[in-house]
Length: 98
Image (cartoon, rainbow, N blue to C red; front, side, top):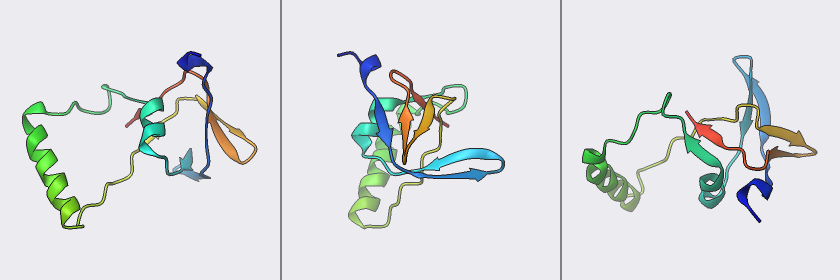
């Protein structure tokens, strides 16, 4: 079975924001990791020189219980469809982090 044969379905809340369709959901990271890419036209690349500094900040904040990840915003670019009470990502399609 190839990745283009796999169907991903997610539950979520559908709404409109600023005239655009929005799906609000929570996903396990392994699911998210399997269906997303970074749009380099929109999202800047990680500054590898600051990677250690960012890691240390996150680890310290998690240890102190003072860190909360902000939500990720993705563009489905027409690759997601409502099926019953779930949303289906087209097989082989990707969501792009903005």
